[in-house]
Structure formats: structure tokens, C-alpha cells
Image (cartoon, rainbow over all chains, first blue to last red; front, top):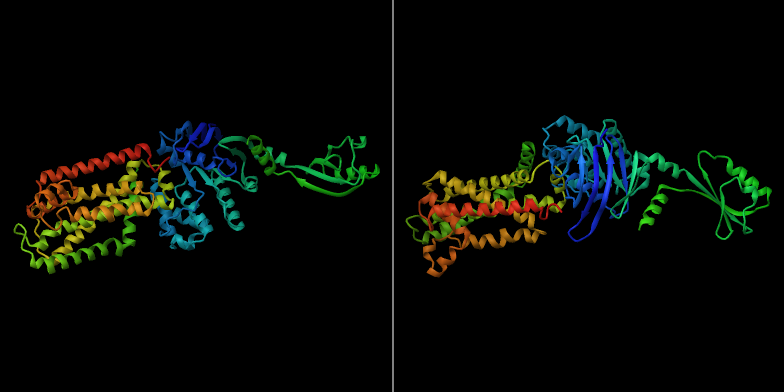
Length: 308
Length: 253
């Protein structure tokens, strides 16, 4: 099946000479949830803005459902919903009016029943006659989502959806995302919270300095994630590894004052006890031990650091 | 043509007028009434007729124009400036609509508001002075063309403005002097020859003169020239807007 969004060699240089995108290639499959990770200023928002029509590309092409986003903007923009990063709302409008407006401005005939359902799903129904400026930040975030859902998009862009959102709302939002996915909506979200990507994405893309560093299925990343590390602070420094430890993936660190044992958290349970037994049998003593899990963040920092 | 979208923008803008009724409608009507009381009744009673028309009746077309210009520029500019200022413009720019449709929604609403206010002021004037309209159709043509032209000018200002100060420069600092010096309150025949010549460089002179002609068949300049000049301003604004849309000036980088 052809990808629903196809980005080819996309470039953007702003008027002040800043190169925000340096030739990005990316295919997004229909129905998937793709998380775009990257530090501030990496080019995430620029990428989204070009696909949605807010910014004109300097080079390359974006096809949405087979249509060019610049030439056939009517077809592409009708398919795309956008929830922006900033809480931009018409302060003096009511929730109901602003959501109804969104549907209309996307060329869809009025459908009060649908709007009612969306507001109820997002716990906004009670607030429908409130002016937006009376709402809390979290509520405004929901309104922005309701606005984007009001015109039934096939592709939904969520730009930093959980910035400044409490845990409850975050949970609720993932439920909404899950429901949308069940209805076949393709979802692209940008974030710099890595747990977020871990939690809901099918694939993860890492973007930095205007380049897409990798796009990988989350499961593949999770395998790297599953790697754990046991660190033993030795009382007596050692120069070479005793032969008895040869069957473990153990290495010497910090001039022999520490041992590091790498293992798969799920598959190698119980091996730590045998390792420690072996150490005791050979009279290797340690004053402290600690374990840590390498996170997506480590991979991310490593990737971003390498290219910087 | 995305009719639903144009309708949505238009109705959304008109709803703003209902919400701000006091500011949108009541305030221009009140201001105009004050003009009638001061210039029409108090001072006007001491002024002889101008070309056979009572002074109060003479200034009516100018007063309508003054409000029409101010309102159209103000509404046309704030309509597009406010979403730019709050950031909600993202939604309009990412919607499946062409720039021309955005324009139709915003400028259509601003011109409609201007027209409504102009007609309300006309109705208010009948309480103070005797008004006769010699060419009602031409009166409406002048009114509609002026409303569209200056709403377009407002739209351009709204896109150009980077802050509220710039937004207010035109309606606050440019329109009032042009209107006051454009023959709203006098016939330019009353001016010394030098200032008569200067007045012909004032675009508002043509609007007021043509509009007044449609009421009383008296004019400072030939009404055909007036109509031609309004057409020219309209063309000028449309050209500028076309350039803005083509280049994405201050809208799409």
C-alpha cells in the first residue's frame, strides 16, 4: 500500500538564512502512530508546518494521499488535522462556537451531533458555553484537539500535545489517540518526552539539526532499551579479567576499579546471582553495586551527540 | 469554491459584531448624533445654506463617509490582525481554502458591517435634518464600492501591521484628517484656490463629493470622475492583495 504521507528530500531555509530542514525523506503508513523525537529547534514543527500548509517548502516535495501539498492543497488539507504546540485560542469565543467554526472553515457541512460527541469524549461538554479565556491550560489543550477532530481528519498531527499537561489529561489524551487509531486515523506526534513515544508510538523517528537521524519500529528500539547494566565497585582494583568470568559479558571500567556487566533484563534473569556467586568463589570483593537500564533517552542523546 | 468555509469566516466575523454591539454600532451612531447636534443644529443654524442645501443636510453624506471609512478600515484590519496576533490564524492557513476565499470571508464581513453602520447613520440623520436622495441606486453603488475598497485597505493594513500601534495608525491618524479636509463639512469652493488644488490630491474628496451628488446633485468634482477614482482605489487595493497572496507576505514564510 502506498504511504499516506510521503516526504521527499524536503528542505526549508528561512528568510534569515536559517536552514531548518536539510533534505528529509520520510514515509508514513496509513493507520500508524509515528512519534518524532528531537530537541528544541530540531525542525519538528517546521516539518509539520510544511505538511499542513503553514509554511512553504524551499525544496523537495510532500505528497499526502498521493496529492502534492502545495499544488493540490484543497485535497491534502481536507485530510489533515493539526493540533498546534502553542495554546492559541480565540479568547472571547465559546467552546462550542470555536469548534463549530473549525468544522465549517474546513468546508464540512454542520454536524452538531458529531461536535457534541467530540466534546463529550474530551470532557468538554459541560464547558461548551464557556468562553475560552475562562478555561485552564489543560482545558484549552482539549479544545484544540476538539477543533482538529471536528472535521474528521484522516491524518492527525499533534505538535507537543502533552507539554504542560497533567498526568490525568495525558492518560485521557492517549485514550483519545487510541480510539482514533481504532478508526484508522494516522497519527504523527512530536515530543521531547521519550516515555510518551515509548507508550503509544508504533514507530519512532529522531530528528536533529534539520535531519532525520533514524526511523525505526518501536519494538526494535525497545530491544536496545531492554539492555541493562550491573556495575560493581571493586575493593581491590584488577588489571585483567579472571578466566572464570569469560562466559559473562563483563568488562573492566575506570582503570580496574569497577566491573560492568551488560545483560538483557528479561531474558537473563537469574544470571546475576550466578555471576555474584562466581565472584565470591574467586575472592573478588566489591563495596557497592548498582544497576541501570539504558533508556531511549541514552540512545537519543548518543545519536544527537554524534551528529552535533 | 469552498462555500462552507467562506460562510463560516463571514458568519464568525459578523458574530463578533453582535457580541461587541456597543462598540460596533452604538458608538458610531452616538458620535454621529453629536456631530449633528453640534455642527448641524447648534453651529449649523448660524451658517447659511450651501448651494441651496441646509448645512445639516449638506454634511450628512460626509458624516456617513467618515464612519464608513473608519469602520471598514478598523473591521477589515482587526478581523485578520487578531488571529495573527493570537496565533489562531494557523487554522485558517491550514484549512483547504484559497487565499481569495479567506479574503471574501473577511472583507465581505467588514464591508457588510460598514454598510449596516452607514445605513443606520443615514436613518439617524433623518431624525435631525431633512434628507432627500436624488439617485438612490447611485447612492448605494458609492456606498458599496467604498465599503469594499476600504475594507480591503483594512485587510492589507491588518496583514502589514506588526503591533496594535501600526494597526491604529490609519483609522486614527490618516482617515480623520483626510475626511475633514476632503470636503465633508464644507464645499471646497469655499477654500482659497491653492487649497482647492491641494484638496484634489485627497482621495476622500472624490468619495464624499460623489456620494453627496447622489443625494443632492451638487458635487465638487464630476460624479463620473468620482466613480472612476473609487474604481481606481479598488483596483489598487486588489493589486496589492494579489501581491500579498502571491508572495505570502507576513502570512506564510
